[in-house]
Length: 309
Image (cartoon, rainbow, N blue to C red; front, side, top):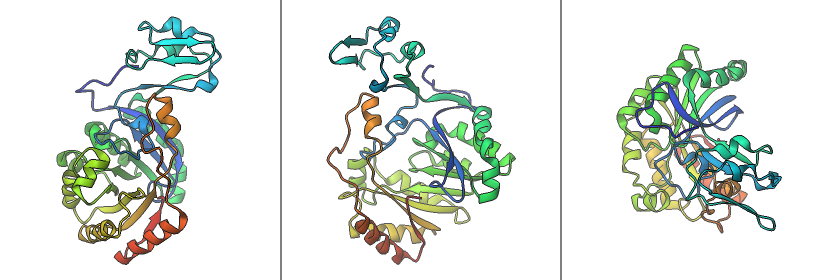
């Protein structure tokens, strides 16, 4: 596999996962298409494989059988093996040719991410069409940040609508308004993630200002259903002040619902498998009572408040 190049055909996109039977990304039973590539660098991200827009190498050292075929395949000499310490990959030398993956018999080296066409994605989506019809579900496009692949997502949503499927977009809102505006015609629901209401705090947590996301959210027409989603990060965005500002925003934009997404540590292993350090290693998820307390505060908005959905 190769990196997706700028100007790639609109019917091709970078995907790292297509998850069937999903119940946490909109109403009913859904298939969630996870796109690869995101302009934000959220410290709490539990899908680190979604950050870069191209296929990447993941290691699974517990599967390694020490056959050394990967060493022979690596033209960059980025892989070494010590009988006592095991295999080591020098990520700076790796050019992501992924030849090592092709020769690994035990799947201890795998690729995350794939360039797929709209037709290929639709084949996977339609495997669950019966569940959509019976549950009031559909398709959710998530990420990464789907707005980073606007032309591809537009064609995918059009294909979904040709089949009469309910469609949702899970977005941080960090992208061009023109891209989002074009997608809205083919969307039934927007799941809009709000990381923090304060711009400085937003920069500290994601590397970017919240000015663009908030602007895009406020420009979404009122006839489009919007769920506000808050990734709940202890000590970062769970203060009463931030929650009150979030309530005001939800009322301002006519949101249909507020969803809490409590911080978790599910991504720790994936950071290690990608050769990266775990961010926020000492941060603990909020307890059940704290989450219940925050849910009660948000219910002052008069809107339904969900947890993990």
